[in-house]
Image 1 (cartoon, rainbow, N blue to C red):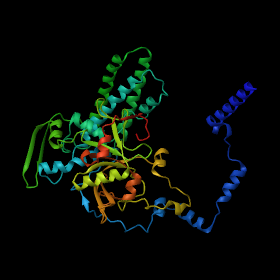
Image 2: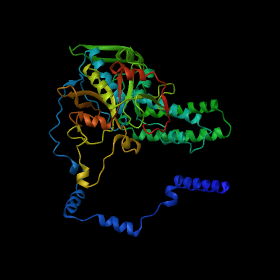
Image 3: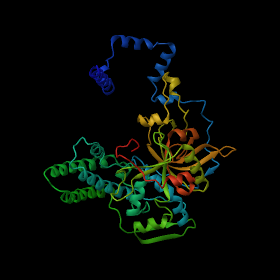
Image 4: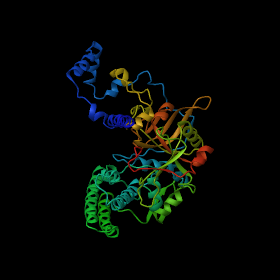
Length: 468
């Protein structure tokens, strides 16, 4: 009797296991004629449906019909608190927003230091070294995973994009600390730095071929030290392609400029690293400046580090402190009041009226137009990959009510002066909560609880993490 009962329990356990492990394989169904008939009957062909169909099949963009006209004219571009910035940059057809933003944060300091009205860094110079270093890191990752199968998840991630022009703030910090920076006049943009797709595609083809060869050599018994000799040969090719497409970076330079008083001045025989040290504030260190993030899928007041998200092999990985929105807003407002701009990134395309330069959660009413419910909270959008950080900009302004509570905020963008409000974007406080993800800020603007949280050992996240 006891044996029979145990057998029955095991059978129930087995059935439960099958039901849990194979819910879609064992019990899924195709769409039946009955299902299809019911679905088709749900579309009523009302006169309203016909009118909407006529409009949607002719309009160039659904956004044009979904625009919430009740909101237009109710959001202005005036701000009680605004950092003193000057000049809009343009990243053209490249993914270098993170680099432009990192440099835009520092541009006001340079203009003050040299008493000039206009200044920009050479993004082309740092872009060269960023891609060169990413190539080396990729090859090192290939060597480290040489004995793993091609379907290993980390290896798949590396091979999907050996190098790219995207990134976050720590990549700027790594490259600038190692190679320095130069003024734009010293190494101007080229056609290929302004439109990076082709050069990235060619470099990735070369790097994937090198990865394939290295893995084959490793399978034959070649050791890591010998593979690194091959790596140097590949990096020579990378350096050649970058030099031909972007120009070769200077090791020393002379920069002439005219100050606000009309005086022509000159910096002679400067090195990029010396220039970087002179124009960068002394307290601009990875200890003082921290990335804070709002990711409701993970525990707040915890420190996280995404493994292998960097450009230089020896550099800093992407590390962030996860905080509630209200903590981030409080710190950001304090920074703006202190006239200090911040690197920030967000899901820029969501609810963006590009012509007006305004982002608001109610800007487009797709639900009323289509009769389909589309709402999802921030956590759900992140987990389902519906939303994530897509663009970096400089956070420079905040408007508040009589109680000093934020109403709206402002970005300095890098899409040129013709985009948005003369190059700037205004966004509501609700939009901040839903679509702003991370800010790089001086630790002095954080409260005690956040400062204490920075002492933790970071929780390690894999290279394929969904925030990557």
